[in-house]
Every structure is written in C-alpha cells, then in structure tokens.
Image (cartoon, rainbow, N blue to C red; front, side):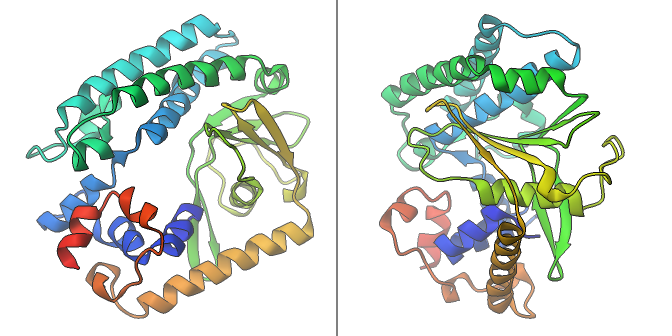
Length: 308
C-alpha cells in the first residue's frame, strides 16, 4: 500500500517508515508491534490543531450543508471548542499505554500528544495558540464566498473517503479531504491546509487524489464520471491560516510527472523490502534521518533508540 505520506516518510527516514508502515499493528499480540501502532497516534500540537479543523468541516459543516442549511460561524466555532476541550482533557491524562486501550472505542475524544510521551508536559502557550489558530482558520473559511458557492451548489459532498488504484503493481491509496460532485460540471477536490507559512504547493497531492478518483473503482454512491477526463477536474488547495486559495489543473506533463514520481518511490521501497516480509525487516539496516529535527519530532524515538 503506497501513499504520498508513505513516500515522504520513506525519504525522510527509512526507520520511521518501517515503524509506521511495517511494524505497527493494532491487533498484534507482540508488545513491540502494539507499541509501534500506539506511537503512530501521537500528534504534535500543530498537527492536532489541523485535525480538529478537518473534523469540524467533515463532521459538522458538510453534514449541515447536506441538509440544505448553512452553518453559522458561531455554531461552527462552538463545535470546534467542544472537540478541542474533550480531546485536550483526554490528552492530559495520557492513557496511551493503559492496558486494553482502544483508540476506536474511545472515539472522537481520543487524542495523544508527542510532548506528553517524551517530555511529560504540554506547553500551555502552544495550547492557547492552537485555540486561537483554529478560530482564525474557521473565520478565514467563512470569509471565502467562492468556497461556499461551490459547496452549496454541489449535488453530493464526500469527506475523507479512501480511494485506491493500481500503479506499477502496487496499490496507491489516497484520502481527499473533500470531493464535491455536480450534475453539470466535473468534480472539485479540496485539500484543507492549516499551516502558517503555506509555502509548499500541494498540486502533486491533489493530482494523486484526482488520479485515484478517475482510475480507481468508484464507490457505489459516487455518480458516473465517464463523461469527464482527469484533466477536467477542479483541484483547490485552501490555506486556512494564510487565507489563500490555490487552484490547480492537471495536464499531460503534470500527469506524467506524478506517474514517474510514484513509480520511482514504489521502486525505491521495493528495493529495500525485496522478498522479505515487511514486519521481519531489520530496522538497524535501514537508513536513518539526516536532520536532527526529524528525530526530535519522531513518534518512534523510544523504539528506535532502544534498537540502536
């Protein structure tokens, strides 16, 4: 199973890729594999902030729009605050290693922080910053009439739906933040970003989403898309902190670039794995991160340093 995040992790640190994509297993009886799975759930405060914004959009805004109503900014902020406080309360307890803990059973209250795992405390200034930034992100979203126009006119809105297709013998997995289907025009794929700088342009990520939508087997509730080409799709990157909207289009050159990128990444991973079962790879034989910052922010520090 290949994804863009898998490719980025593998390039950043092969050991990190191994712990996340090979070793971790929620159902494993092996304590090490179980620990790797639990460590994969750790959030930085900034990534947690982004996950709350994603949750509010997919669990409150979009369901409200499906009823042909328009959510208010005040109600949306209140929903965000409720999720924020519930998850923060759970995160402060840091129950990650409690016997029998099941993130799926905890449900929407589940949140665990990297800082609690490795320093035992939560920087309160970061929590307050996250609170303000979530509000700013939602305010910026409500200030974009072109986004609301597209969402309100959509025939069908789909959030966080896994898509997959085959590429060079491997399954490519993609999970778009939102797909808007229309009766008389091609679908719109939106990727929400909650970053301060917003320097990285996510056209390649959105392009992979578009290829997955058009090349994969459609979900049963998806409308027929045979009248459209992948180059017809609208691709929007919405930067919610910087309040920027970037529109992208695919052409044959960009599609070829994405296909080559995926093939090269899949090949690089296959060369490391070979005929070995992924879970039996020796992590000490894998390349480690070059950047110290990668190690400092890594969820798997405790496992990696023990095996070093």
